[in-house]
Image (cartoon, rainbow, N blue to C red; front, side):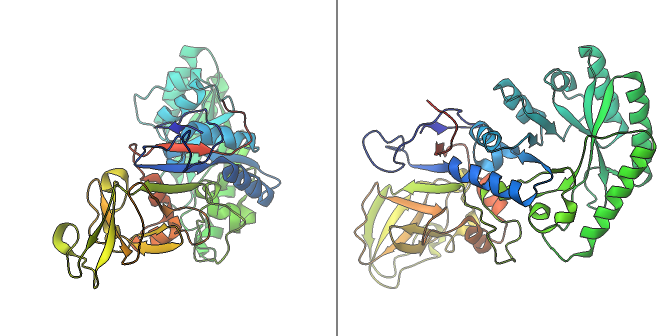
Length: 403
């Protein structure tokens, strides 16, 4: 078990995450514990929900803040046949680390390193003809045929070719296929309301998508995969699973449909832990932190936690962010600062400096990322992805060999 930063350290070993002289967390102010066994379980659970579709593990944004390389390897170990990322740098990091799984990246701008992407056998998404032109030029330079997924905007109003623009995109793709510089291997789209199971746009977007697929096929395109199901659609819209599903947040054990009282058998992967840097007594009425927005009603014990908004703790978690220490639940007391916040541990607390608190994670009585999202008016996606680079990711568990 070892800390991993940024894109993630590919090696970790088993060990106790909080105790013992050999603990890799000794001396750390805080860490995000990444349970790769839980991640592998979630991949298998989601695959079982879409048994007739291929599985793309979406590992963009440093695997939703969990550590790119360890998560990608664990997902592949659990049966993911594809990996998906948003940006070229993420795709390059995966390829350069030796991951040769099918890999799609979908955001690019003119002048990006398309040649590097084609040379690394990365599938590329195209929402406009200019992308096709850059991909084709890169393919000619490399001397190969590039793999392309055409994206159709079926109603999200974000990426993808909308309306007649898709017809133009298909026409240019066919011309470049004829010259041998590209091959259209996929057609895809993204939902606007998949997290609202009864929203009428879900069916409308599916219908528009399959109309677009039929249009492309009539023009002579023969895609290997048609894909539109994100996490929410994978969980609650079997009709959208098509040839390939693309779970993201669900793979990390967080539900994209919190309004449904069902965890779908998923297990949270990240537990965010911090050590108390200082414990002291304060009298009743003493204001705490900037602006004195919190003051205890009785004499109490407070603990200083060395993490703040620079580490991804939302500033609007002031006075509402839940934490646990041992069997006790409490909340942040006063304002979250750049590098620290305070918790009211209660008048009878026997906590000492160095004790571990859990901000969110798995286990009885432990706050969840969804509780943090509810408390701060956001979504669980943001809670986990915003954890900063100062917080090491420490991988535990998983079936792949590590040294």
